[in-house]
Length: 260
Image (cartoon, rainbow, N blue to C red; front, side, top):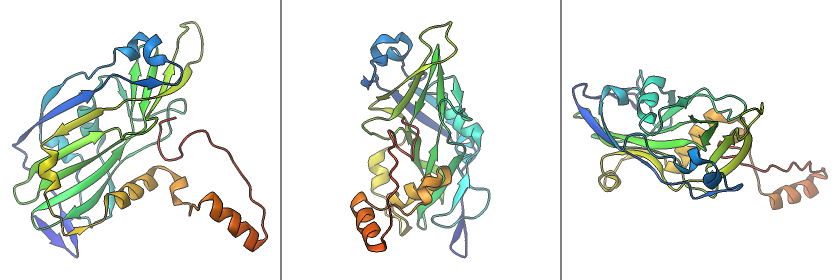
């Protein structure tokens, strides 16, 4: 453990192993009933409910250089692929224009103290299915490490809850050159190690909030996150005050994830 100018170096004990549990709940809803009519989607389940990993897999989430709170760095693909294959074996991190446009794997130092460090991260991936694909909105999570012992205290990588958190493409007709698309909801798609209750008891003295970390990470994926958004009511008030017109664009999906 080292600190320099409010920056810290993060490392893990290379001899340890970590047991990770994986979960995929049955898909509860799709707008066009794909989760019932498409057998592959209806039967989607976690590839391996539990698996042991060398701690070197999680080293991929750590920065190569000292970092300060709020600072971001890119995650190594190898570690993410190894973990996500526990959920589904056919993966793609470099999504094409049909199923997503979020490129990169990013982490951020959210908080630390003399003993622990909390790393927030966000990655995007698609599952290649028989006759189609499934793109979760995002995989977000936290890695909390014991800085003194170089051990993992808690790890979670999951698809956040939401009214819609999946984008889906199904090539229903094998002879067709295109896929039909849908969106849906899955209540749990997650990898986890350690106890969440233990992690919640850790008091980290130097930090940004979880919401701030989410915004910082989202900004690495989407230029729309750099816009100073205001509500529709504020826009109307500002347009009247500045004697300007409002150009309205209707969008049928979110700008900051891949759920639709």
